[in-house]
Length: 319
Image (cartoon, rainbow, N blue to C red; front, side, top):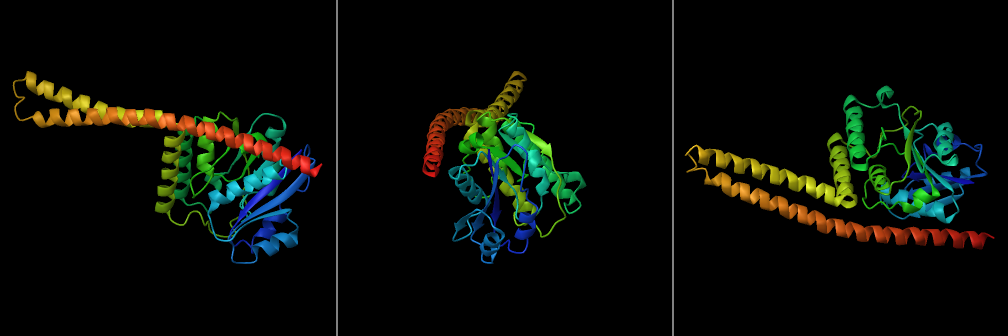
C-alpha cells in the first residue's frame, strides 16, 4: 500500500521545510510513503528547498495557474506514480501532520473513499468571527448541493483512495475543495469527516484576500457545480419559482376580476403569463442541460478508464 502526500506550493520557501518536517515517515498499514510538491510558478527557492529536503516528485508550472489546476496536476502525478492513497495538505503547516494517520485509516479499513479533516473552526483564534460564519454557511450550502454531511467543506486537508482520485475532475480555476465534494456526492463516493488539529498561523491566507472576494468566488463555484452535476434539479427549482410567481399573480388578477374591478389590472395578467412562460423555458433548459450532463458522465467514465490504463502501464514499466 503506497501513500503519496502532495503539497501545492506558491512561493513557500520560508514555511515548506516546517511543513515537510511535520509529515509522517511511517504509518501502520502503509508500506511506502512518498512526497510530492506542485510548484505553481513560484519565484522564490521553493523547488530548491523541496529537493534539498528530499521530496520524491516535483510537478512544475512555469507560471501561476491557481490552486485548482495545481491540485489536479498533483493528483494525476500521484496516480501515475502508483499511489494507492493520496493525501493533500498545505505548505504553510496549517494542518497537523500527525493527523494524516487519521485521514488514511478509514480508507485502509475500507470505510470511505474520501476523508476530509474537520478543523476546530470555532476554536481557531486567527479566524475572524465573519470568516467562521462564512465557513459554516459555505459548508451548509455544499452539504445541500452534494447530499453529504461534511461539516468543513473548505478544508484542504483530505485523503483520497485511488478509486476516488481517478473519478475527480475539477473545472473551476479557484479551488478544488468545494467542487470535489459536490462531484463526489454525484458519483456516490463514500465521504466521511474526521476531527483534526491545526497549527498556529505562519502567514496570512493567500486564498482569502478579501471577505467579499471569497464569498463571491465560493458561491459561484457552488452554483456552477450544482448546475453542472445536478442541472435538472437546479433549473427546475429556478423555473418553479417563476411559475409559482406567475400563478400567484394570475390568482390576484382573477380575484380582482371576480370583485368586478379587473379593469386596470391587466398588467398582472401579462406579467403572470411572462413569468410562467419564463419558468417553463427554464425547465426545458434544465432538461437540455441534463442531457449534456449525461454526456459529461460518459466523458468522465472515459477519463477514468484512461487513468486506470495509465496506472497499469506505469506499473508494468516498473516491473
